[in-house]
Amino acid sequence: MHHPPPAYAVPFTIDRSNAPRRYQLVNTGTEPVDGLSLTHLGNGYSPPLAVHRLEPGRSMSVAVFGADPEETGVVIVRWRRPDRSEYLWRMTLADPGSRS
Image (tube, rainbow, N blue to C red; front, top):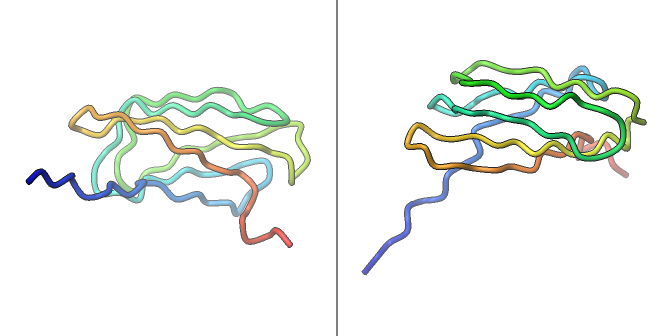
């Protein structure tokens, strides 16, 4: 019988302490991620970002310009694990705890 591999947890957390204009994407995983790219979807503007490698414990900054705090949109995060498998994660920029 074939057993699928266990689920792979997204290796990132978002530091929103400087929101709504700046966010930190932190690699909280145990392995480096390669080919990391971020694409913003929504109101305002966030420059597209790409990083060759993000080591565990390291972070990268995401800036959003010209949008109201509640309308900053989402960022699509794309990366590869060391085994070269590719992943996508839809990261919301609005703080989910701040909604009424």
